[in-house]
Image (cartoon, rainbow, N blue to C red):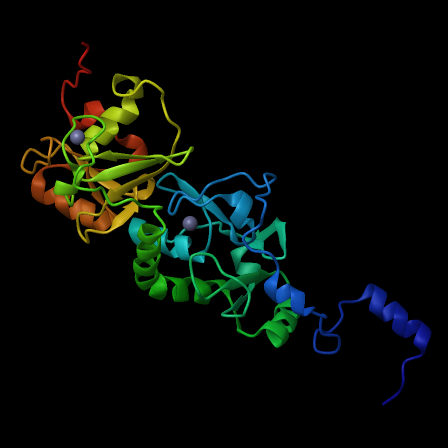
Amino acid sequence: MKSIPRRSFLKFLAFSTVSPSLFPAIVNADACKVQHPIMPPDNRYPGRCPVCGMIRPMWARTWITFSPVMEVSQVCSFHCLADWALKSGQDPEQVMLTIYHHPEKSIPAEKAFIVMGSTAAGTMSPVSKVVFAAKSEADAFKATCGGTVVDYPRALLTAKVSVAQENQTINKRRIEKGKILEPKQEDNCVVCGMFPARYPYGKCQIQTKDGKTLHFCSTQCLFAFLGRQNAYIDDPVTPLIVWVVDRSSGMWISGRTAFYVIGSSKVFGPMGHEAFPFALLEDAKTFAVENDGKAVVYGDVTIDKIVPQWNYKTE
Ligand SMILES: [Zn+2]
Ligand SMILES: [Zn+2]
């Protein structure tokens, strides 16, 4: 083989696309354990995942944005993307994935090379999905940190297969850590004073910015509270996360990405008329058809839609 003179070889390096196999990108072992989540949280990346409640300033490396699907347009991870795709029954479009090592950059999902299952830390899943813009970088990362290089459809499919199991594990951990507080027998509903612990499908709660948990017996009381806090408490709180119970599975789910059936004249909850929460839109639609109701998203639920002629009592 004819050797290339050094001068033109350097030119070749400078002006052409270098073959990845000839010059694999050098990945430092530190790249496997780059800090994730980001601490302290970096406020250059604003946003919150409505599926799980986590914040972008911490989880920016795995953030995903897309054209709105039923009012949701950003999630923290492939886990929450898969979760939302399954819950809404729609695969998001125009998906943009964040480059793991450059959280300030994102690329269209179709162009991404994703190292799945490496030693790098993931988000909401033990199987991390580390996004790269170049195959050479993904290959080099894989050589050092393990895993498999896959494309976007494969990564999403894997996340969908794992999401139910992962959600069970995550909920168990949330309850252990007090991120979801099971109401105790003596805890009262902030609105009506009843005992939420007695209503396994009615109970719901708000976690506030300053770490408080407010318990409710039902979504009727929850949305009455959200409609006018000062009818019930002196100092209004900033709700961070709302937890409700999926009527199908009995599991705690994020209230902001639940689907609600309102307007049923056949089924009633602890307070009478309710917004019945479901994880899956499909389940909500079926329940609505069977019980004369209508399935809507969180943003469409207001207390006066739950209870006809609702009136805040004034004393
Ligand atoms: Zn999330
Ligand atoms: Zn109540």
